Image (cartoon, rainbow, N blue to C red):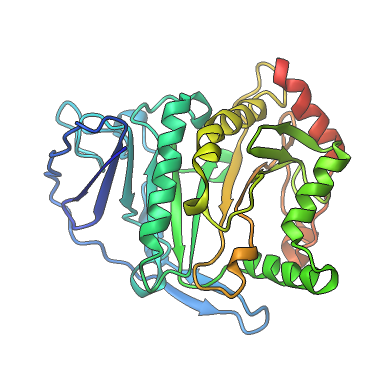
Length: 347
């Protein structure tokens, strides 16, 4: 992998990740851009104890542009985008409309490919491996920033999820605090250790492997299963068999196998609801240990992949119980979801 760091016209960082070591990236961004101005601030909720990012400047962000005006496509034929070069393998840049900025953290956009019309599931294993390298490298770099406590790499896919740009891309958030989901996992992890003397994540994976009913697929170095208490209609957790706290500590064997397993999962998601259905909307989210949290080595890196579509033409909405009280109600039994995801392997 070759990494090339440059800047856009307004001073934001742009990073190219290329498979070929001899690739030259010297294109200059000629756009007359004003400096990025943000109003991001973090406010603490005194009742719940969590944090909310207030970012009013995001109201003006790019919203569903036509394909020939996509800001994530490479710059070609006199049209200049966020990527100055005429093609790229993987590109990462600071978001022009960040939810978190400055002392409040950092937001980046990850462009998986220069091909506007492909999805992550349509990437080759080599391309997916390069995205994994980019996620890992960004995690390592952001770990060095004093204002970043935790890194979250994720992809929102589909208009139903709220995606405003059709180009295949994801995002990376560098939070200035430990997120509520992660804090809850730490509390559960610590309670389990105190009660049993064992690691919670190890026991969860071992239980699913022993039961087998919710396992979707297994590799030599990864295992994917629908969790026992899945919140979403179709939800899969992907764990490396060797527990590590974050992407930086995956060994070479796990890195090599990851594209095979992950691409297969994504392709199965697109087949859940049968032929003729539009692509399945999903969120794919890496859970990594906070950088400076006590007990971080006990945390287990894993990816959570889920869709808000519960059946053909119907979405799972977060209504009263979910939004008001954070109590999820799932219409699809996890065992049935796992069975369906196993069935579509051969379709």
